[in-house]
Length: 301
Length: 260
Image 1: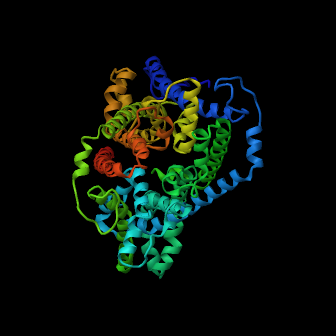
Image 2 (image 1 turned 45 degrees about the vertical axis):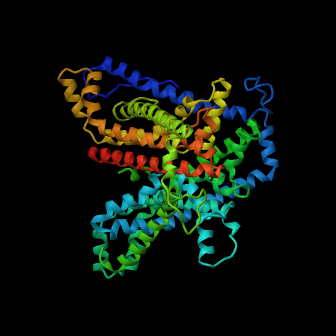
Image 3 (image 1 turned 30 degrees about the horizontal axis):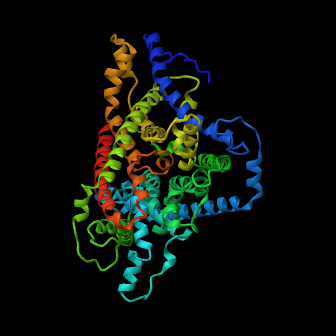
């Protein structure tokens, strides 16, 4: 990493060359060293670990380069299947969260009137409360002695509690949709608020019905926000392991859970590292696709 | 937009969704006043005893204290680092700038499970015992993108000529930073600090891998989920913490708005 200060402050600042350069190093070194030590180094170490044959001989034992972990992964179809399932689950979560959040954003942008700011806070409060707590709340909703079951029994609709509500992938997907809806509404709202309302007047003057105004103006112009919301939900959900841990049980586990297992219970760190590298690669590919599709700068204006 | 007519179905949808979002939280809230250790309807015997027991439950309070310490430390570090990178990003031209900014933002997209096990590997190889420090280090890394974006966008809104004026008047660059730039971005720094604080305080996915013998509150909460009889007390504290976090978030939002 060779970095030289090329004309700090460019041409415009005449004075302060030396102390500006000294300040540069003072500002530059702490974050660089911090990120190198605690972000770059661990990821590189994990990459190196994924090429080991086993954890035997201690963690700092000699590095034997081998592709055996990756070959194992390729041969065993179950990991790919789980990665596929996790991707599909994340896809379902992202699509549902965006679809449910769009009318919310539309309401806040065009129909809520002067109270829109207050309504927005109302929407975001659940998102600011503890993640673990919100997921746990769903456990109380869906459990055999939970709210839904005891309510159904109380009103006499069923005799015995339905056990199928909790501890499966549907419960995981449902809980994650719930967690993400407020978050998904934000980029869509930002995109809708940028639409020039004069366009609607022009369309109405030219005889466009509200439905056509929506399909011809609102929807196309809000698509960048929709895409951003989709990826902002999709990408973190692919790597999710906490929600399956709480409401998924053994039948609802996702790809992140096997990584966790290999680093805790099973203690097979080289295989866990290889699985993590594949997860990282998958995420980076998704991000590259997202950046290609969305003009990121547009979101921060 | 014309036609107020579609306002009614839309607002029905909005408030229905709001109700659905608050329902599970309301259930939790009820649970903390429920005398049974499991929640079923109809509710019987409301009680405040869980809140009472809370103040005698040393382990829970210790875990909450641990989380406070980790959040305070990591948010401060993340804010300082975020300020440094923001100033570099907005006021300097250098070759490795793109790389530094990319590195600082990248933790936002790396899955927490991957970063968690990678740091676990690093600390194991270096033979550093897991502790609140290791959790705090991880939280500093994941909070940095937030502090950078908050402070950086604030700094972008300021005219660099102000700094030039200060330097024309004879101030050296460090003095200009201290007397001109820092006061300008101070509200954003407070907002960034509060955001980083709430990110850390609530964080579980990394802490589960990196916490040692002293758990943070989410880690402790998770470890106690198996014991039904301890749950109501935990939830009572969680409700109090929820109120605390909300207060912080609202304060952060006020500071961020004051900046713009």
